[in-house]
Length: 79
Image 1 (spheres, one colour):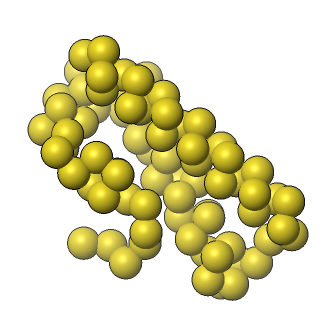
Image 2: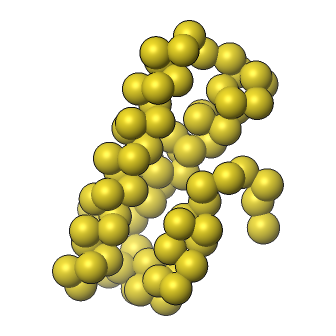
Image 3: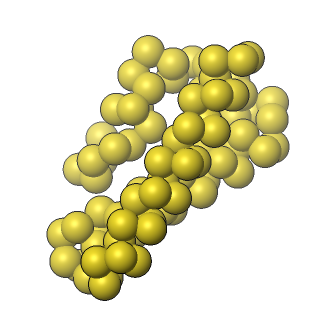
């Protein structure tokens, strides 16, 4: 388990089977998962000052992560 907060397993703990099924059957969904993990890692590195960002850049990154998560949630709900 990762020490990075906001992983998909934390965000959707009861949807892991559905996440996996959609990942292997839907290329767009698989790409969303990759994008979420990449953006989440950037947010975590910024928050922990490993790779600090200007405040508004960090806020924009968090908004982007939320947008991706919303799209994932929408696809999970409608599958």
